[in-house]
Image (cartoon, rainbow, N blue to C red; front, side):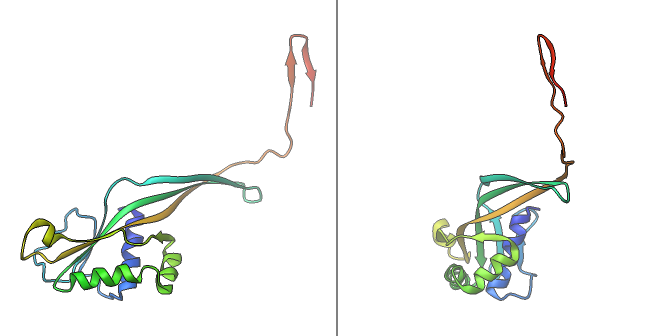
Amino acid sequence: MNEALRQTAIFTRDLMGRANEEYMSIGRDGADIKDFNDPWIAIDTLGPSQRLATGEVFDGSAEVMTYAQQWVAPVTVSFYGPDAWASAAQFAALIPSEKSNQLQVAQGIGVFQAGGLTDIKLLAGRQHENRVEVTLNIQYAIAAEVDTLRIDTAILEVRTERGLELEP
């Protein structure tokens, strides 16, 4: 499972005040939503993540090299049920709130303002499917640590056509 989607799901659950995770789904694999009257929330990606930045830091005392990357990913948060539009609009409105900022820090992600609200029922021309999608971007970081020995003194030898010119 994509860790960024899991963090986004926890963020969404806590921002919306949903203690019950029974009606939450991460991704679309293996999740059949049979009754659109239940208040489901589904979180999924729209496309590939794009790398924003990379970096590396060496901790000389612990002798550990940390390689890090910053990514941004498009995400959909789909709301189902009779209150789907109200829930989606409330979610989009709460993104810039202080509670949202605290949850983003706790989950280690950045959630950008919603880019759109789409009523899938209107889009598909149906009368019975209560589904509203919120599209937004999330920012997340990944890191890997590698044990690396530091070099306290450099051993330098300069070899030329005349032989060894500089010894340690």
